[in-house]
Image 1: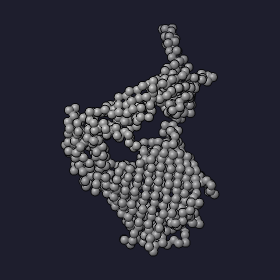
Image 2: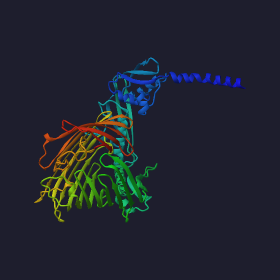
Image 3: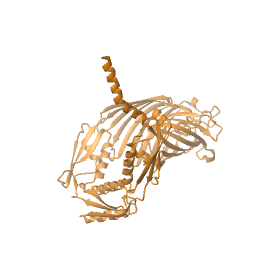
Image 4: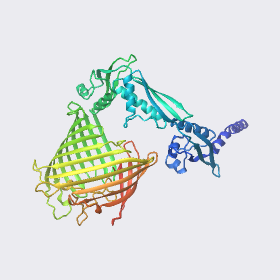
Length: 608
């Protein structure tokens, strides 16, 4: 019995040994080098290959997976490269024999892929064919306009993605002009000997369509009249997918839905009238959000937000919000929001709040009421108008000792402010392109016996641009000024400008940069300038790093800005992407400055 078992064990080892040895002898791909790629970058080509190079550090700490070099890898390389290059118009691609270099132990291999791209195929003619003469002429004229969005034009290198993008564009134009059943197909006549291609667009508009009856399902506590009010379409209007999408966005803006979907009831008969069904999935009427975090400035912070949807009807929302941190020991807010107050894209909100604030430059207790109107003008432009009233109980012992300080410990503020925001950044929560411009004037009046009337103006510009494949350049400029109005000569301390901190000039602690008294307590100022330049460099997966140069200062007087007095800081940081946004650590210190102290900052989200 024992002898049989030993024989069986030897047989199993004999059968398995070749596989075991094969797994041990296949070398790990350590490096991939590309030669002859004149049109596309090394990174672009390496990204399309399924076989990846890896390092020991990358495998152990950065989540890289090892790729092993086998005799099938070369065939896979050829297949992937040919597929990509052919789709980009390079039909004469030649792949030369691969050069491989093994290390001394034959455990790692370096691969050199050698390419000869050849001349690409270029589009030489573009035609439109259709039984509808009007559409044929309109699209031909559109393709010849300087600002045309059609991309596969004569003189352009042939690319598959241009063809499919143009197909969607042409189809979208026809659908948005009432032809819901339009069919657009490309016919490509390519001549590889002449490296040229003719693109013929076959157009079949189908019947002209109009919107039919509109029905709603799933709305239990949201009044249907409010949903209909959000629509830009009505029965009998000429069909347009764009109008349907805008209506869907405006319905969703009511804020009471998890899902709001407008569905066109297309059919095989291609009838000229298209019914529309609005499928609604409402969000729970009661919900609670809470969060817990830590930062170098506010230490432990926590919040809770309780929301009631359809509060007293009319799709109104009630939010009860509470927050604690070192900077705000407590803040309580109650906000009633009315969506679609005056138009489908306007929102009216009434907020009351009480809070205690403990900043390095002051401590106070405040209670306030704000009535604001938010108007979304288009997808990139919005404006807010706000009426405010606030009472302040100031701890004057916390203020800096300055000679002209003449401020009460109890006073009120009232007036109005406006905010204009232009924002075309994408993606919104972690931008890699676009601009964001914010302008905010604020006027504190004397209408309700406010002791310190003033006029305040702030502006901020942010820009994001990808300069290389792994690098996004982020830039920010911020400026502000505040002036007393009338016989007043005092600006309330909480309205003054302060600089320094994790979202300001990072070489200084919060409110540390700017005028101070003899005990180094910040006094704040009436004008400020700040800027930041920050390359954001992707390392691997969710991990990235930033390098930054910050500059700025605060001046005591409104008209005292002196750019020669700007102070600067440099530093670096690490970012880790999460579902709620990037989490990061920044380390910075002043440069070209007498101050040399390092500052460490923890953040959720980017600094700007």
